[in-house]
Image (cartoon, rainbow, N blue to C red; front, side, top):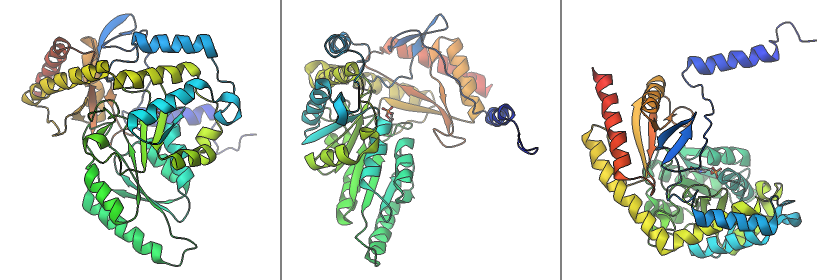
Length: 406
Ligand SMILES: *Cc1c(COP(=O)(O)O)cnc(C)c1O
């Protein structure tokens, strides 16, 4: 029997949903009837898509598709078991060799997702008595991982090096106290931030972590394939790629497939194979995903990858001043992610709806993905977009601005 003061299951869920709606935060899935590309099909209509993380246009690339098809033919659809049982198939090993060579590091380990990589890695490395220090804007998977690890959590204001230094000093001092062992300190940040497109000051963070004996984990989800001469990421571009203990990336963004990875030393990868629970207790990713990701890595490393990266930056450089002239504040950091800050959650939703009516797809990004009152259109550009595509967007955005000021 339900106790009298306990609402029924449906009533409870409806009340919670009503609360989400009342805050303008209700979300629902939108069915996409086409492959990723600069154009996408929704409800029978073709829309210009400015919201994908497929930065280099590899998700629907013939070479990746062919690699996936070959893997299905040779290895089937499912992996059968976790990597440590009998699911560690050749495509996973080939992917990890390619990733290590690409990153210029000893070893790499792939996970079913970036979320799983963050979760498994932080929980394997850190525990009670340890301290995890995070940038305020770091990805939810890293925040959740830090919480789950049981370590003490300290957050510094976004890219605030003074606050980071204060926290590190505090952590080192605390570590002198009579604890059973010296506590470990891990700093984690993104390199290019997912919702703002700005950069972490990696050289300064590296200097601070070295001064204080901390470890550093950098999530390059939005920089892998895009930055640096070898396109390894922002750490390479900022010349600190060999001074970061844990380099994380995703296989589902510029690399065009699905999954996540950690790259670093051989010992790091061996420890993760033995201790990362999201790796150990999960069926290996399907061979098609691993084979496509490997092809994505090889493509990024090739002349074609360089050309795509250069096409993307050419477009970004063309677009930024145009948006700035149209009254949208631009960050100083060049990125494929360009936040168009709207503010109120409901205004961001109306702006997204108005754009959709004009054939442009950029969903509004709201709390909890970004802070309350910081709702935005998160514009992303890819190597598949043209300057003409952007002109269509700019015209529509100008219409929006005029409507909101009149
Ligand atoms: C997308 C993303 C992840 C998670 O990766 P998935 O493979 O999508 O689980 C982690 N960190 C950042 C910064 C991301 O943008």
